[in-house]
Length: 109
Length: 114
Image (cartoon, rainbow over all chains, first blue to last red; front, side):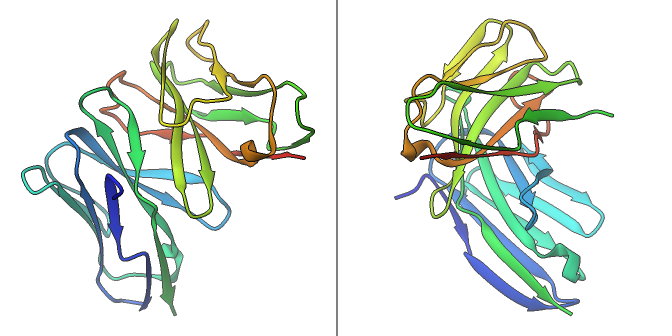
């Protein structure tokens, strides 16, 4: 079993829909990152969380440390949101980073 | 402009020929790290460095070396590349050594070992 699991693996939605991507982990962590990778390959950091909730524009990220779960929400989705979204956790025992396998999001116009 | 610069972007080499992929950041970040990305396996951490002269193994360090002699540079060295090291490589940096700040990624290096 992977230590970081993301769901769904693939998601296709219509423009304007509310999107939720989930990340569950089985290790103790000190922080969790949400990353975005566009088809060109570049990786951009969206959020770094250690507790609670963060919002940036149409993106919202939440984390529940007790339940070892984080969600990334996109409101009013747009075709430019089409990308792979990756969850990454920083392990508190040694500061290594381990990644989920990503969620491929496709927003149709 | 604040950035992480990797070179080269593309590299084709042959088995056993030593190579170095450079990574440099201009943000005075303490933390730097290397990752490889493979289809079906996602991103995996190779090595990381919390500060100058401090390096630690990630999940997949075999076949790789790194050094952190100065804060801005963190080269990845493949002493004897093999075809299973064909991959897309990313370097990243972060302000705080404990990775409590956002990761800044380079543009990637696509390596092919024949």
